[in-house]
Image (cartoon, rainbow, N blue to C red; front, top):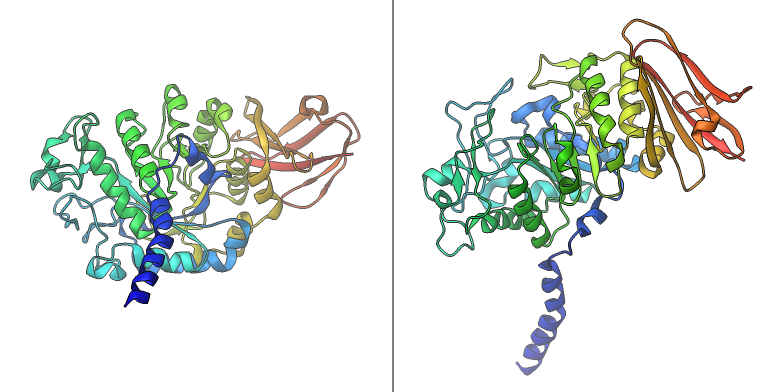
Length: 454
């Protein structure tokens, strides 16, 4: 008995640091270390809207582990309304939604869609499945507190008797989805509610959280609560705020509270969505930095709208030239990359857009991203790779009808001892006979060069 007591004491001493570390709050700004390069993954929204099911999530995780993981793709994200049993495609069921929620006003996965969540296990079994493949797991939520929690005056966990109806307001309720109310950030119980939510997510093994209806208007108070709750929960959870347009006036705040933030509303598979994104992105170049990334939104390529929000089940409507343009812009801009199509439905061309080693290297390693000009339907963006001294150069013809010659003087690129280069997408060598790099491009097309020095 004495030996047993000594062993138990020893085990307890051994485990104390483990438990203390698990609950240790992180230092201010430490979250920037969790996404030193722009996150890369898959999100269920573009192909499944609010109706994705567990077997579909697993199928996309299986595909990523087999085909994309070695290129840096790692996040699998379940998007909106995973807690509604009877949601629908092409909008939301806001007439008679059946919510799944616990006694503390925290949503739980709908078991009819996520069978492994039975017996109160939540998303932990699904997260475990994804983690075993060497991937990371993420979810989407709406800001605020559930209306159901307010109506039933559910207690806020850890708030000493405060109930949900004491910390909410109907002001600034989301206009397009009425599941939640705004949380009054200065009320006792407000921080405790968000703490309880992220305590649960940490237990499930969540690595990534996309939070909607935060950016327009910009909800600084709730963002502060969320940042505090993540830092307190003991798990490194990457924070993505959504949707755009995040106001540039909030840039200083958002880069100190989120790992990524949306610049625009949803980007779908039409050319005007891409040109609008490029236009808005102009003001965000100075804020591209390790750990904090302006976000171009999901990548609407491959097979989308299987049960989606916009249009019928289809392969992307973008032409191949437009797809190259989209991927080139997303990667040289160093946006987070979240593929929106159903991965198992990819064709060889779509897969090639996601697995070009030089493009992925540029996306991960480049710095000093700059737009040289954006005028007359011509855009030029450049960046540098400090590891090998190379310079990246993307030329875009965004005009709708005219073939255009786009040129850049080598002196504008600050390349000491220029040696040569390649077209990253084709692998063709770039031969320069003058002090100018130029390409004649069809409408909606692009070229991406890697330039090397002596």
